[in-house]
Length: 186
Length: 186
DNA sequence: TCGTTTATATACCGATCGGTAGGTATAGGC
DNA sequence: GCCTATACCTACCGATCGGTATATAAACGA
Image (cartoon, rainbow over all chains, first blue to last red; front, side, top):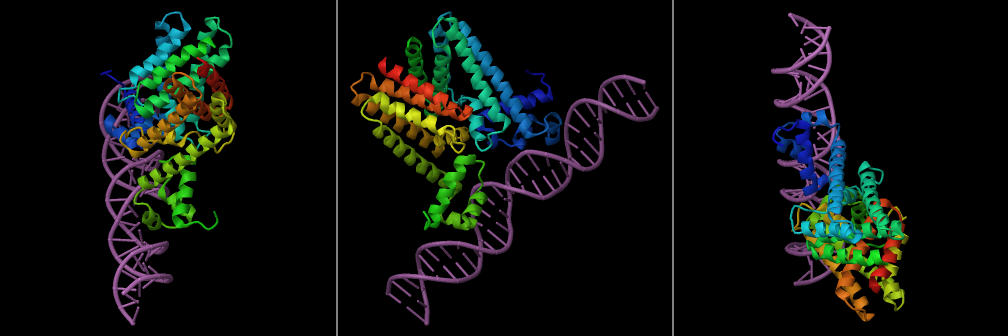
């Protein structure tokens, strides 16, 4: 972490600032200032702000998927435990003021006026990957209707994240976690 | 609609532009241009952009709550039908390219860096009102655990809206609508 | 040793941001 | 007739936006 390349430092700062304030609320100047560099240096590594934004989201996406896998793997073999653990981890992160919901969804919201934007495609792809991960877990448990159940569970998960963010109250993720069990049994 | 006051026209344009492009993506200049006025006129009716944003969100909030009540009232007496109708209406709006999810949630996402901002409070209040509306419906049906069930259903609803927006696919709201029945029975 | 590539900086661009100082036309009350 | 409030305008403000033309200093290969 100490000896970091310039490119890596830019990306790390973008990861923090874009998530904290939102993409449109963070100017290139703020990033270069915190990186201790100047604008042409940033544009040496990234051709445009859009490119930096995409790199930022790909970084977040990879981290989320890795964390999801880790959480599910550590929760044992039962599906309800696996997926319940994901909701529990949302509840755990909710009180942290630095946690601000899903970066992909928030970015998609910021680019609502531009449906063709790369950011929108990244958000859609990301959510599909989470859905696939849930579907695999449900299927491996031998439960019927894995595609439908996985879809219901991802929908529930993003609702939990949204409410956790909007209210700052971990109970929403916990209530959703309880719903997971009901949905898996149905 | 034809004979509209200047203030009303500004608000109507803000309602459209802010929702379509996002608040930070719409400058005061764009609004005054479309309204056929100049900036001092806008600032004669609204003290700041923030004030206009708040007026815009209050307008949206009232409209959503009225539409919610209408949908539920028209769906008959059964709770599952009432709440299922809400999810069906999300599914119906999903293919409309002008529909872009919940304006309150999207605004809260845009102001992620400012937890004290009025916009964030409006979003939280709005979601609580929807939750209350669901709770009343569940309680009136004589079902147990109305607070928990209502909470689970609102979480599910916002997840459905998020996925409908991110994927542009009405099936997510339909899958969530099917989950409503399972959750109400549990 | 010389030319090229890599990695940085200074200084600037036009556009747009939210907001305002100051002026004006008009209508109604006294 | 005069005053005040309402409802608008022209013209401008400093700040910030994303981005670039140009210079330079160091490292490296031939």
